[in-house]
Image (cartoon, helix red, strand yellow):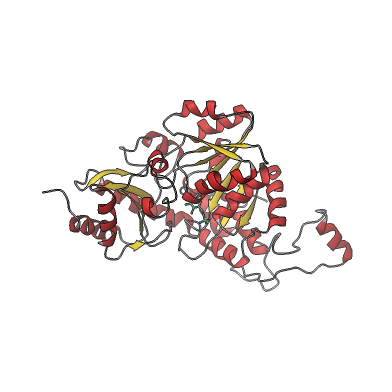
Length: 397
Ligand SMILES: *Cc1c(COP(=O)(O)O)cnc(C)c1O
């Protein structure tokens, strides 16, 4: 792909598949399950990877190609494949690359379904996972066995907002010849580009900030051509492809990713600063708050602190739930990365399938509340949070 523009925003706005004969400005939706061959020889060549072009939408489609090519430009990767969800991107990538007997080393703090995949589903096919703790980086090396093939991490993690040193984990993977996979969903390529530190595969739940408006489910995996060829082969024949309609939405959404992330991060920082040391809270966590244990590292590898913050209310689980019930208009929902601020109680919802011990090890306390800060006026968001804290007040003034 020739380099027509250098900056993130321009790539996100301008990258486009070839125009049709109608010279449309915005890319149309290609709702077609298959494509027509010029002749029998072209069909043969396409099926045998001797020519470029579309055959069938499970393999490729112009809308998917545009979304993938744009994401490649933004993450700095060679190649990619768009999947029906973030989970199908994670499942397909690992299932394509590992076999029975292989071992995964993963960060302990993970998205709930990823944790289920590693502990309940992959073991059915003889793929086992060990978990490394963020505060004991020296112990990770001792978890690597001769069967370890892949390191999987989330940074910042969901919902604990742990920050893993991408440079350190990149070097660890290189030293042991392992494939490094980073779930970059919370940061988006606007805040951090893991391939700069030796990451081999970058995965997104496009459902979150990439869509950014809570409309679609989607996912993508990005990486170098060698790994992507294996993943594409797996996906072509197992069928987790993203629908062209969702690709179209997601590619349009990327046009506003930079400006949305600026505002999400601005609002989140303002709220984190306001809530820090609030008498009704035990603690507040946000990567760009100096009280975050990895504040310096976050500042080193991220351009902004992200749109998610968590806090632990005084009074534990019951107080957390009554706090949620006292919010007037902020959304109680399980999604994140939406224009609308969403408040979640991880212990009883997204991470309820983990045991109490697993949750505590992943930093999820019963009183923890996760906020995905939206694009509303920050003062309105603060007022709803403050009033719900006041309505459930425990501490005497
Ligand atoms: C939501 C999420 C996923 C899963 O994505 P889906 O699109 O819901 O399948 C994976 N990782 C993280 C960090 C997420 O937040």
